[in-house]
Length: 63
Image (tube, rainbow, N blue to C red; front, side, top):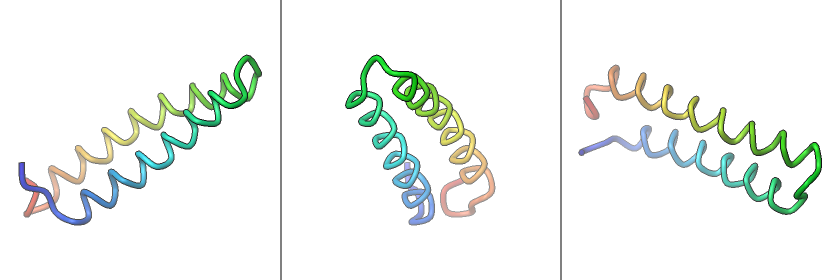
């Protein structure tokens, strides 16, 4: 699958944020903040999928 630079930039930004939230969740295990971070990471993953799907449909290089 051929993708453009913008697709890679969008994906890497989301992956960086997801990694940060997961690491925060692991560092502060068994706290309310950890549970919130884990939930936010899951939500962010679905938002990433929607954003990449929208980009893929609109981009002439990717689509």
